[in-house]
Image 1: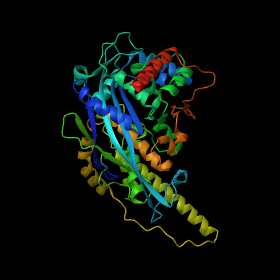
Image 2: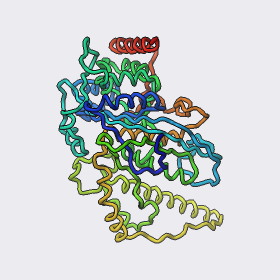
Image 3: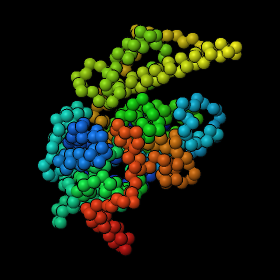
Image 4: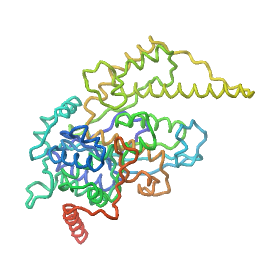
Length: 481
């Protein structure tokens, strides 16, 4: 039994897992992983090192720098969102609808539309490394500003140690390292947003000590995640080509696109959730689309400039602002998306006018003229802001955490499946037409992604061989029982 939600959803339940309730929630977590079509993962970290390390020109140097950082930093929370494809509704289209500029990339036939129905279970696991680790001031500031409770982490975080397995571990079988073993055994596809850093930290913190070279690391990953690695930032930047590619932007744009696609009889996604009883374990993250937007407005030039001036351009472009909560400009993602839409609309109008003028010069008559819209004024914009302002910050408070971030990643990927994938009766991701995106990881500042493919000349690492052998032996023994 689950709650069927519409294409538009107002909130998503996230189960907070800690040392006090992990035994109670462990069975449901195991079942969610076992039944998932794909699992979206996100981490909150105590630090990621310097930008120079992350942006090193050599990919090998980039890996080595990130690996060294992972050995001294920690995962403070782990987010998991398990998406299970339950059924796909196929209906004939009765109208042509408005096709987007990138519609030629879509695999779905135009004669029918598919509604991809997913059951979603999302967890936020509070983690506490039992060894010394570095906490970077910038990471600490970011986490605190977004509602992370360090007191709660220290008092009831799920403990773990880094690196290789210890000879005689004293931790419970219901722990983060055990969970990662379950994840490896499940062979499920895993989805990240900007995957490389997450993959390095997950390996070092919950699996084994990292190998010295990237080639060995990649070879190990092909065996750790047999179901494949998917990166929504890669799809966003290399295929979909949104104006920005940070997670909050991609998620919100995916929400809007999904709603529009459903209303124009194109393939879309519907999210279903379990009916959790009221509990302090369940945190409902509000994420509904606002009832109004500026997308259908036609501001004059002065008003349009006033709207753009209201927005923090640093945050709009990168999802991050050095001033944080002290910034006097708006970080409202919906307003940012409104402006991007208006910019695209104005470019489209200019292109149409240019083509129309060219046709007239060539002697072709064009009877179709754009209707004159009533222009949107500054006073109307101020009224619009006053209605939205109070509610937007409340919606975001406390929800920028690993659990909700993993849901945002998973939902964005589900929308990409509806857009670029295909349905042939199978609920397995390998049969959904997403092969082009499998095992391609985004690399910042590079024209090509990192391919998670074992080369002929690379070898898996010694630590991985020992670890995967233990996991395989455990699977064999379980099957005998």
